[in-house]
Length: 328
Image 1 (cartoon, rainbow, N blue to C red):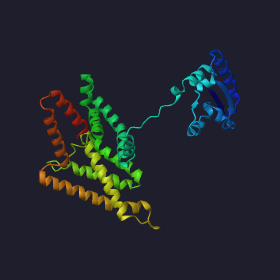
Image 2: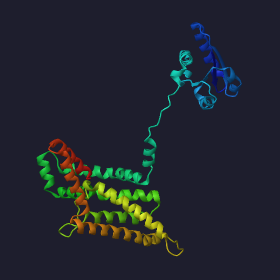
Image 3: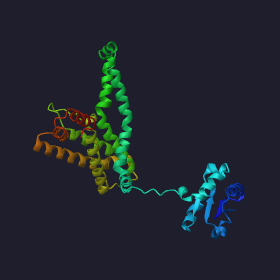
């Protein structure tokens, strides 16, 4: 067997080759070792059965593999320590050092394309931006429900308790509304859509979907964590509708009016269209089923949980916890 060791200039490979020859002589094997630099390796390829490449010239491996030559890259640690035992093992068992080709799963391409979609990126950014709000709200909730009865009574009965309640309502009580804002902001940054108009449109549409309470006030029951999926869905629909509407009407720049005023004026059209469609759908749905869309979906999922859970109390409890956390 003829082994060729290739390094950058040929000097370091000569020292390693000498140790390799000494090891071969001890074992009494019929292996011939030659060395060369990068500039001369083509002259010796025809005589080599196995080629060892120094780590600093590992880029040669691709070229040699194309020529159907057995080529192995020497490990950096073994090369630095001039370890001839590793080279001996590589020469006797070369198949063990050939990197195995990893077959990519069939779903990887689909997953990559799915992850690169603007909607998915916007959802990811939205939930990531929501984490500080959730953290602050959780801390305020813990402060408002201390396990020490004396402190808990002292806090809840004073002005501190009132401020804590306001903070909790403005954080944990409005998670879905914040999520809608963050998703709209991320989608706007990716597409170049007017951020102010898109955020306003998504907020109004989500509030309209939530409906009005019997007391003729805004229905805020789904502004918290229960309305996250509803906020995600209506925000994505609004983003696509807003972007399509804005591309249809276009914008014209003027030398006399600033771009901010022009963008604000033109954003009124897609905002009005999105608001009109959302209110129309909510009104028609309420007229047909006498219930708001958000409440209808929530009740449907709860009924489905009861149907599939059966009489299993643990399954029922687990599914109800999931429905409360994610609000399907």
